[in-house]
Length: 85
Image (cartoon, rainbow, N blue to C red; front, side):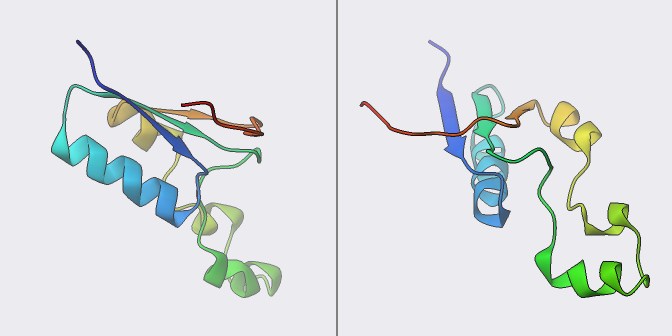
């Protein structure tokens, strides 16, 4: 039976949870639910973006290609309002 892992939030903690899950189990199905419409980004780089020192792409931790390569399904614009386990 395939193991399914659901991560809520695509912030740095959620991203690292998904990365660790993939390292531990190459065959599990990993899905990240993110309320925003963006990939994980580095918040500490925002001032550099605002000042024009870096581009928007410089903020992104991993692009869509990384999620595809690592078989991690990132579902954007999905807000979790409750959990029933």
